[in-house]
Length: 91
Image (cartoon, rainbow, N blue to C red; front, side, top):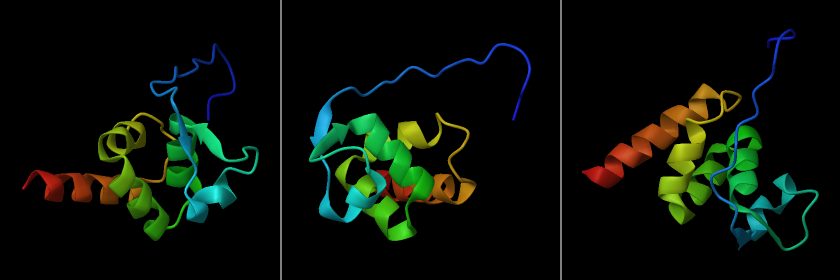
């Protein structure tokens, strides 16, 4: 993590509000029933189990793929499985 210099903030791509699936509510501790799509994707990819990531990928495949490779803090295991599932979809 860089501690000196200017910090660049990534701009959001997905501002639409979506309903939070019941299984993923644990990651959205500051939201009630709906949340911004990008926030839901980011937290699920960062904190979620493989089952949770697969669930969110099935709901939003294109958006999940884009967010997985946009943020550097997402674990590489999550990026790997998102890439594998994306390739399986295209076959």
